[in-house]
View: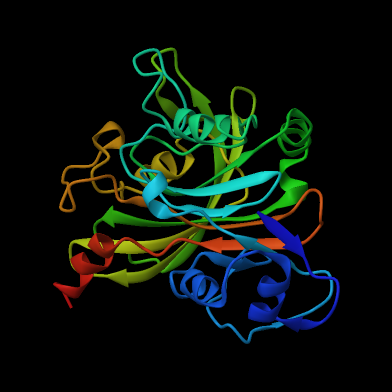
Length: 280
């Protein structure tokens, strides 16, 4: 449920006016981070609101096997766990983020469309929309609306170059492997990276994409001879965290209806950071 602010006020006062919930119930919602202002979690009951802002009440985390980071009448952003498919494959059609959200929304008789994907073993922020119109708009004008897609990754080896850009062309083989090719046969892929922590064995990177090709980050980092840990498909030789070392931690976009900038951040998994704490 979401509410538009028509006059300057404070958060708790606004919620008391707009909902039938009691003061203590609203304070608990604030405490447990279920109140959002323009898509951002807000916990302060006296937070000042300005005319035109959007206040929404999130869902209980216990309702689903993953958190709903944000939901309004048109969009849902979730924090997908490692191991869960984004959508159906030939081998699995039910245990997917898409089907879980579809079932959740069926109670409200709402539809759902997946506008981008994460690999099965990549965790992090994933966005859905609730109408064919918005799906068509975002898929045809993705770069116009989606401003930032940020990731964190652990790669094998100590990267001597602290930052850089990988710009080349990718193509998919008949066996569904992605490889670097030339302009004639592939699609352009651009990845920016920055080292934010390192040890003698591993490096932790912050990554931002200009393009969103299938397996782009995995192939690009492997091409530098620093494959993502746990990624045996693209050359990894070890798996110290018992999962693929890739997490979609930031998503920023312009809401296609309200035109407001929406920014969401998913914390870096503790297992990523603990690997470097042990090796300081």
